[in-house]
Length: 180
Image 1: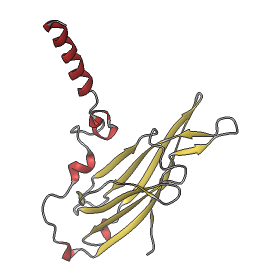
Image 2 (image 1 turned 180 degrees about the vertical axis):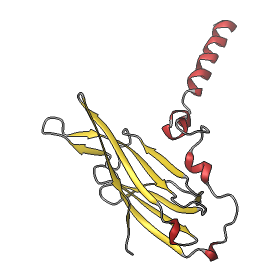
Image 3 (image 1 turned 180 degrees about the horizontal axis):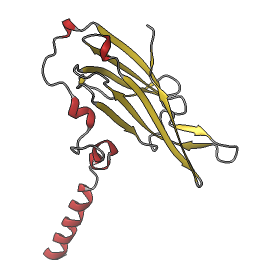
Image 4 (image 1 turned 30 degrees about the vertical axis):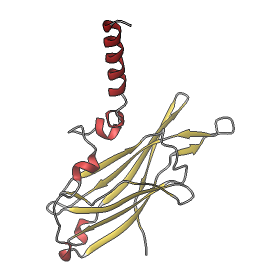
């Protein structure tokens, strides 16, 4: 092999490997305004005085990774967008846990390594791609939030979309408080 062939081969390998960056293909990064993971962008970097917090709540949010269609085409995979909205005009909401569970109740993924801060009127949207079918038809998120008082109670929803043949469909679910 001559130097030119080796250079071309090396260039091709570099180009191929640069396309393997998973974050470059993550819709959460691609769809975000600043081209970064929205959860990482909201991570709390300084100490927060939680002694003033009087509100803490856990929510269950149903997610459907797939749904039954008919006898011939048993299931259709769905993509889902989890949306956590801080509805207050002046106070931050802190999210301590976003855990994803499958139909059997087994933990699939824990999304947070540290708490995140959702400022007043802000929204966290997170996409679960349809190719991620580990959750199954009974998948769900458990989300733990806290703040200074009950006025920071969030609106938590999930929107699922999919298509089958020439038909598209969408539906949503709401987060429900978990009673401990």
